[in-house]
Image (tube, rainbow over all chains, first blue to last red; front, side):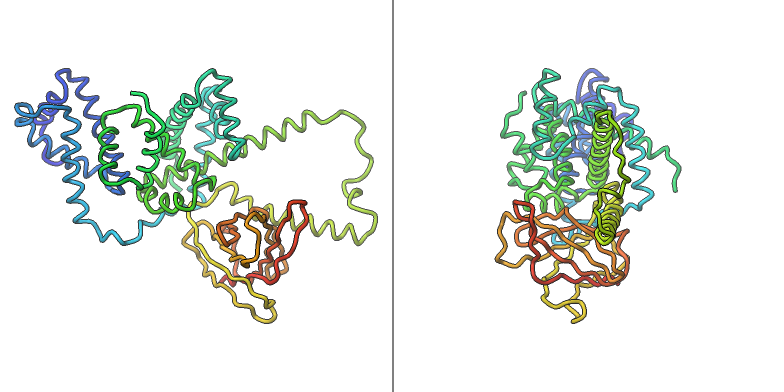
Length: 185
Length: 263
C-alpha cells in the first residue's frame, strides 16, 4: 500500500466496525472481492488498483466517520469506479487483442498434474470420492451422475454444487502450495 | 439471501462480459455485500472453465470466454487447473472401470488360441490386421500426450478440400514450427452438400507412410474440427482424408483431401 499509515489504517478499521476483529474481517472481504471484480473487468493488476482504492478511502476516513451514512462497502465501490475509469484511460487502446495465454512447458504441466495427484490423495476419502463422482462423465451422463450423487447424499443439486466447489477451492490451494514447494526445473 | 435462477444467469453473463453497464454495476454492488452471490460467482467461474475444457460452450460463449474471461493470468491458471482435474478424473474413472472389468471376468478355461489366432486364417489377412493394429497403436500414442495434458492454447488453421492428390501438388496449408501454442486446431471446411447431423472420421497420412486414425472430430458449423498436439508434429507433408460416418456405422469417403505442409 502507498501512503497508508498505521494510524490512518486503524481509523479505517474503526469506521468499518467498532469491533476490531470484525472490522479486519470486513476489510479483508472488501479487498478480496474488489480484486475479483476488477479482475472480472479484465484488469491484469487488480491488486495494485485495489491498494489505490484503499489509500483514497483511507485519506478521507476522518470526513467519512463524521459524514458518511450507509454501508461503507458501497463507498469503496464508488471510489473503485473512479479508479477503474482512470485505469482505462491510461490503458492501451481497447481494440488491441487480449494478452496471450501464459505459456507453460511440458515439465511445468507435468508438475502441476503431479501436484494435483498428490493433493487428491491427501483429501479425506469422502471428499475425494465426491470430486471424482461430481466431475465424472460427459454431458447427459454427468448431469445424471450429479443427480444420483445429490440424492445419495440427501442434498439438493445446488448444495452439491457448492460442496464440490468448496472442496475444489481447497484442492486448488493445495496445488498452488505444492507448486511453490516443488523444486524449480 | 436466497439466489434465484435469474441471479445465476446474470452471474454467468457478468463473467462473460455480456451485461450492460448498469446491470454490471448492480451485480458488482451485490457481489461486494452478498456472500451467497459471491460464492456463486466462484462456482460459475469453475463451471465456465469446465465447460470450456469439455467443449460444452456455445460458439458465442466460447468466443467471449477466450476474449473476456481469460484476460487475466489468474483465470488462465484456473483453466489449466480445470484441464488437469478433468484429465485426472477421466483417468481415475477409466482405471476403476478397467479394474472392475478384470474382477468381473468369468472364471473358466483360458482360450487355447494364441493371441493372434483370432485375426484370421490367411497370412494376408493377418498381415493386414497387424498393420491396422500398428496404426491404431500409433494413433493412440499420438494422442496419449494430448489426453494426459490437454492443450490450453491453440494455433488455428482453416483447410479447404482439394480434388488434387499429393503428386499433383495440391494446395497445402503451411504450418511453421515451432508453434507458439500447445496444439493445432484444424478446421476442415466441408462441402456444402453434407448433412448437418453427419459424424466424421479423419485419416491423417504423413509422407513417411505413417497413418493416423482420428475419430475425435467435432462439427462447428460448416467445418469438421480436429486437434493435434504441437509436440507431436514433425516437419513434412500431410494429407487428411475425411469420412462421413453414417448412423449404421458404415462410412463414405468425402471426395478430395486436405493438405498440410509442416515446415
